[in-house]
Length: 367
Ligand SMILES: *Cc1c(COP(=O)(O)O)cnc(C)c1O
Image 1: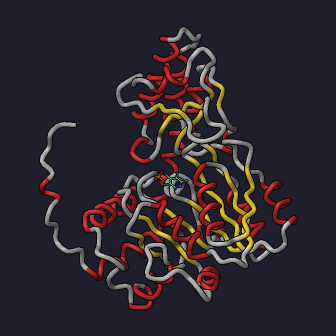
Image 2 (image 1 turned 135 degrees about the vertical axis):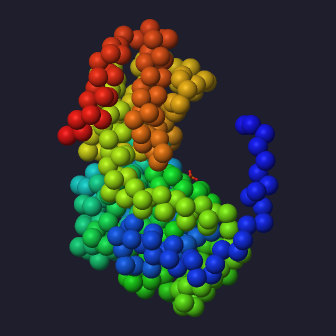
């Protein structure tokens, strides 16, 4: 890090009390929802924990879909609150199947809540959100979606799908600050949240937000405002709106497509099929000759971001990061060049020219 002077970050002007509601409305528009949107003054993991904690009570049964460590945590928070949790584990690091969800719901007719992650940056997979939410809707089950990574990278139409609770963070595809997050909450979900004994006077209480923010005309938020984060969120949303959310989603799609086609040309084994793949990171199985420690020990090219997969089942996966600002031709090219260098270094047979042609073709002829 260069020794830069950050004192300009001190003493920012107050964030106007009437500027919070427009931010929430802008986020609602990005999510395609008319539901309430709460602004949470913490990173998205706290928002997820607040949802689980605020929903939890001993007479509830939940189906919790686990496709990464985030799903395991969510199940743990529900259990802590006394919920009877059925954890539905996908094949490690793979997406869950709609059939498995249907079978689990049929096996437990008492299920009232279903939780899942939309797209996983840990393993580069995409869960079949639309079909799963439809299954839940048909049974009157409240759906909770962790869309922290996917918002801005994949289409996310909260009202069209009928998602009751969606948790988002600006720090992934939206390329915004990590210190804030947001939750959209449907009327049906509020009925569930407004039970006899919800958590109160707590950072994890959604009812506190309802009473202190929504019911008071959305003036000031609970707690001292994190000013710098709100200014950054405002700027990030403005940048998203300038680009347009659908163009942003398309840009992530192109980055994923270009990465996949270049990797295929290099003989890589992609981890999942195209329709099961996240547009945020692309994952492939590391060639046998290369040890994971060799990969992660150093940078393989400037501007590249190659890392190991995270969580069970992802131990041999190499992740090509093209999230947020990295969903660009430059970053995708840097990733592929770094991978070519890695293959060269470990004497794995490959054809770099064909890979670059495949990459260029995606950008020049995106159909
Ligand atoms: C990134 C992410 C979060 C937020 O967690 P951090 O690791 O703290 O950034 C939550 N859920 C999912 C699916 C994520 O990808």
